[in-house]
Image 1: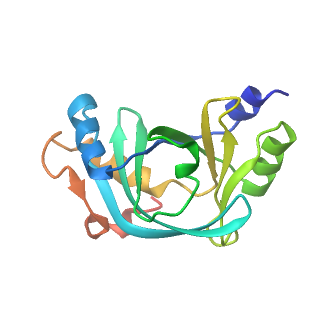
Image 2: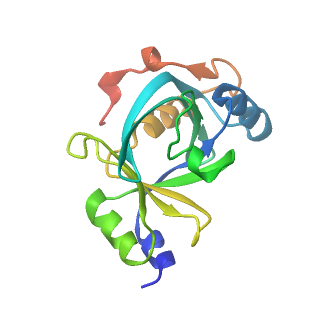
Image 3: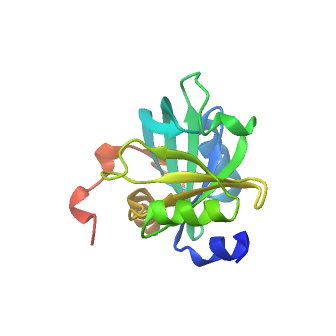
Length: 182
């Protein structure tokens, strides 16, 4: 099996990921160009990961919005450490995110075909996710995540009745947690 067949068997595709210097400005520009939104903003969050086997804490701001039939994740790194975001050496399109039933099995499967793990979360039991480095074969990283992509579901729900302009940026305070999982 070649790498393209591994990629194509994993579903659903949760989001397209971008690494940018200013998440809010990029989200605003994406909205103006493509009509994406609304966006939920998570400001100054710490991500605790193993990056190439080393423990790393990365502070980031994430804007997640809805665009056509998919979620858009826009990540700004606030800390100055090397991370799974900075490794590529440039801003722009960074990754796609797939839902998988078993992160460790998916990481192993990709590794067998020459696509190594780049990063995984500290607590794989509590919130498992990983990135594999598919830049050589696909041109981008692949995030593997078994969780329902609740951020995508939130912004998808908001987009249904959205007027396309007002209240473009929202926060977790705007989330009705009682609606999750329905």
